[in-house]
Length: 501
Image 1 (cartoon, rainbow, N blue to C red):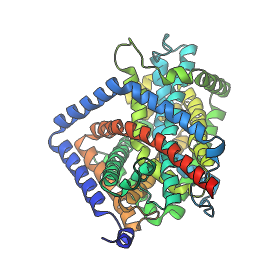
Image 2 (cartoon, rainbow, N blue to C red; image 1 turned 45 degrees about the vertical axis):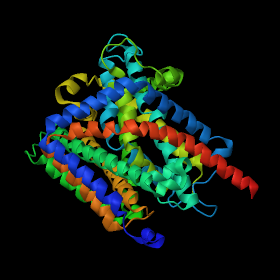
Image 3 (cartoon, rainbow, N blue to C red; image 1 turned 90 degrees about the vertical axis):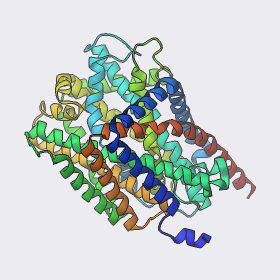
């Protein structure tokens, strides 16, 4: 096929059909042999976290260092694009889409839940008795660590790798483009296709499970808060509504659909945060947040390398390594989407908005919402009703509970929709390589995400598939180390070429 035909066709047939086939085979495996699949996946994940946990920690730390170097002098001024390229979106909408695509609804669930878990069971790094003032501060510090620099550096580094190569070299917006400065033109051959197929599989698995889990959690939240029983088909009903909404918005496009949801989401997010701060234990929340930020900065280095030697069980694997693996499994689609909306911006600006601002946003949200969970002690509710109930348990202690709960449900939905929209767009770019993929292709992947989620929810295999998608982070860990090398290699080459002109 000629180069021009390759550039105009709606998708790459090899990437599309192979990734779709592998996904279908994996789903069939989960339906027909659920126990075998679950045992295999859990075994792989346990082996990777226990044997390679130290490398997950080292990789995340090196990416943080690399990101701060990128924001420095000579690298920070490089543009993700050509000299005449201008940003497509204003700063607010750009950050709203960026933050929402990466964080999903996880921040609404884990924001109040994780600090409470660590509050009733102190992390081994700090130790101490449960439910003491010291443990409260340490619990918040570790929550900050799991949602701070290390997590966002994974996205930021991959975003720069894809964005710079795509917009300065005229390469397609695909995961494989991130490796241009590592393997060169070979990204156009079999290795590039393998990388993109891998990215499609990881994205579809990760987002499909998130769709199902959000549906299950919204259903549980409606039951907990309002006593609303939707029946056995509630999960399918919620998945269907979510799929309809994000498929419609992704079909409309970035400017009209995804941007609108991102903007509204950020305003509601800020409003809920301010409401809890104002009507909750305000001074306690401010003190806890300030103290925990200080502890985070003080202990960032030792926590980054803490492997819990001699501690029984697999605490690091279940928490820190699990988180690093989860962020890595989302990285291909999040980075491609952020690169897509960051064209024309400089590296310093892009990395700051992908690393510093989200970290600060997570600190403020966790400090206030998670701090409220500690102050109101929602640990008993967590044990009885699960993680999905934490945010609603907090709402019970605040005025206008019914109205607040409506906004919380809305926030969960819009955060998820922003991630689902960006995932569908990224999937379309993976298989097409186009900056603005065909709207029918975007809609196809939106429907596919919902369909896979419905199948997994119906077979009860969501947890297992989620573990499987996280297991894909094992090879991603090595790929990210290659990308870290390739980014600086490519940027140094670009700077040298600019000096010689």
